[in-house]
Length: 389
Image 1 (cartoon, helix red, strand yellow):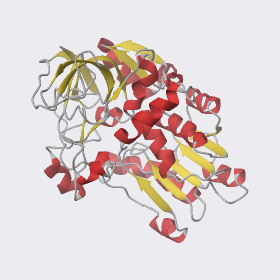
Image 2 (cartoon, one colour):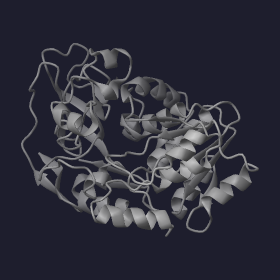
Image 3 (cartoon, one colour):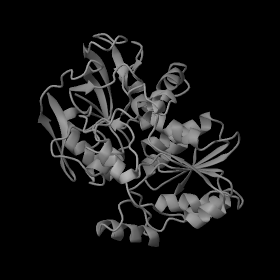
C-alpha cells in the first residue's frame, strides 16, 4: 500500500509499505477514506518529538471502512464506516474506566521510555513516534486499529467524511480545551493560536457559554476565520497582546486563557521569543513557551489556563511566581477523545456546528510532501489539509 512516511526533519515522502494485518484479536484493518495533517504532526516534521525512525508511517486523524475484523471484536463488521480516536485505549484499565482514555495503562508498549522522561506513561498514539508505541498512522491506504472495539464511532450514511473526520482529534481537542477552562456563563475567554484546534476551541467556548472570545494570531486568513466563528481578534505582530487584553477587559484580564499553540510558539520578535529560539537551537531548551508565559501574565486573578497545545519536554523562564501569586488553575493533557466523539457527533447531526468550515485544502495522498510544507509555512491560506488515499 501507499503511505506517508517520515524520513527525517522537514522530509516526508509517499512510499510503498507492507499492508497491515490483524495482529491481535481486538484489531481491525481499516481502508482509509479520509485523513488529515494535524498541527501536532508538524512537531514531528520539525524534529521536536524524539524517537522517530526513518520510514515511520504518519497520521493520527483518519476514518474509513472496516475490511477485516479480529476474532475478539464483536461490535464491528466488515463494511462498517467508522471514525477512530487518535489515541489508543484498552477500555479496561482504571484510567479508561474513569474516561481518562489518553492515560491508558495498557496501550503503549513503549511505556518504559516515557516513564524515564515523564515519570509515568500515557496511552499509545497513532503515527506519533516510538515514545507512544510506534504504531503506524493513518496517512495511508490502510491502517491497523488496535483495541478497535473501544472508542470508535459508527458514521451514519448521510454524513460525508468531511463533516465527521475531525471527531478523531481536533474537534474533541478544542472542545476539551474549552471544557478544561471551566467556562462560566458570560466569561471572557482568550485563545492563543487560530490554527485548527484554536478554531474549534473558539466555537466550543461559545457553545459552553462564553460571553466573549478573543482570538490571538498573526495570519490574516486564520484571524478572519476566527471572526467568522464569533471571536474578536488581536494580531500579535501589530499589537501588544497583554496591553490589548487589559484594555479590552477594563484591566481585569480574561477569565479563561487557552494556549492552542504549544511548543513551537512565535513572539513577533519579543525578547523572550528570541531567547527561546536561541535556547532551542543550542539544545538548552526543548519547547518555546512564549504563549504560555503570556497567558499566565494575561489571565485574571483566580482564572484558569487551559493547555491543549502540545508540550514535549522542558521550558525555561516559567513565571511560576505570577501563576502562584494570582492563584491560577491549570488544566492540560492529551485529549480523552473517546469521551467526546459521540456527544460531538450528535452536535454535528443537530446542525449546531459544521466542522467543514476549517478545510482549506483538499488533496490526494501523493501530494503529502508539498502539503506538509504548505501547512507548516502557512502558505496559500492553508489552515487545514484533508487528503484522500
